[in-house]
Amino acid sequence: MSKVVIIMGSKADFEWAQKITDKLDSFDIQSECHIASAHKVPLVCYDIIKEKEKENVVFITIAGMSNALSGFSDAQTHCPVIACPPVGNSFGGNDVYSSLRMPSGVAPMVILNPGNAALAAAKILGLSDESIQAKVKEFQENQRQKLIEDNASIQ
Image 1 (spheres, rainbow, N blue to C red):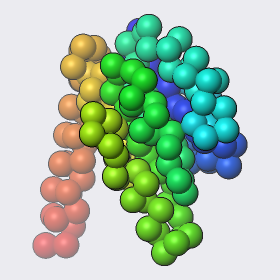
Image 2: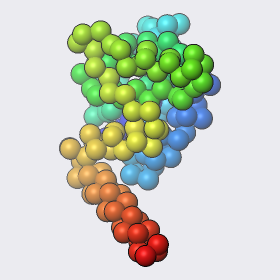
Image 3: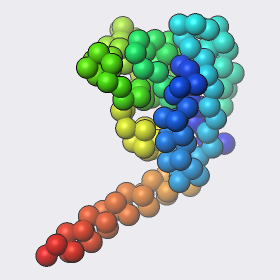
């Protein structure tokens, strides 16, 4: 069973996680959420990663400000990690750099839009799950058709 495991740095990130899980639901992808700060409880975070990587999973990490969670998670697992930091105004939005700048050998993907993070996870899981791949293709076709209809409506 394919699954997305969302790890949040704090409960304040739960609303952002809901935006991701709502989109995952549209692809019929099972998800689960955990709270485990890489700064405050790294061993708890490590244990979650090691337990969940035994399954066919994609991790999505949600942490703002100083985002150690995404890099830490990526460095601990062979599974894909997508960083989806919540949009913030602190530091003029520059806290996103903590998600973008990673040390060598640490490579979480960074996607700022929660729906797109879910879509990326669906595409990854779709490589080994034909039903998810079919839902991704259906989603993409619906996007194309909407643009065609929108264009026709203004002609």
